[in-house]
Image (cartoon, rainbow, N blue to C red; front, side, top):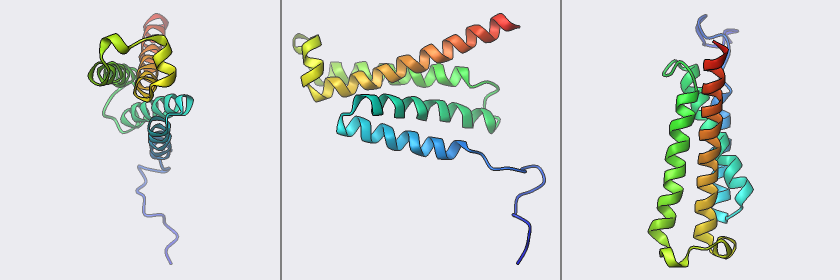
Length: 131
C-alpha cells in the first residue's frame, strides 16, 4: 500500500464546499417540495452560499459577493414568476399564503433570494467601505 494520498503537493487539503452544496440542495428540495418554509429557506441560503464559496475557492471568481447577488436575484425572480404563473392576481392575498401550497413555496424561494441579495449587498458595501 502507498502512504501518499494521491493529491499533488499543490492541493494539501480537500474542500468542504461540496458537502455543503449537497446538504443545502437536499434541504432545499425537502423544504420546497414538502412545504416546510424554514427548511426551504435555510436550504436555499446554504446552497447559494456554498456555490458562491466553491466558485471563489476554485478561482472562477475573486470574491463570493457578486455570485450571492446573482443567485439571490435569480431565486427572488423565480419565486415571483412562480406566483404570477400559477395563481391569478385576484387570488393572491396574505391569507392565501398560509393555505395555498404554491404561494407559500414561492414565498420561501423569494425570501431565500432576498436574504442572499441582502447578504451579498451588505458584504459588498462593507468591503468597499473598508478599503
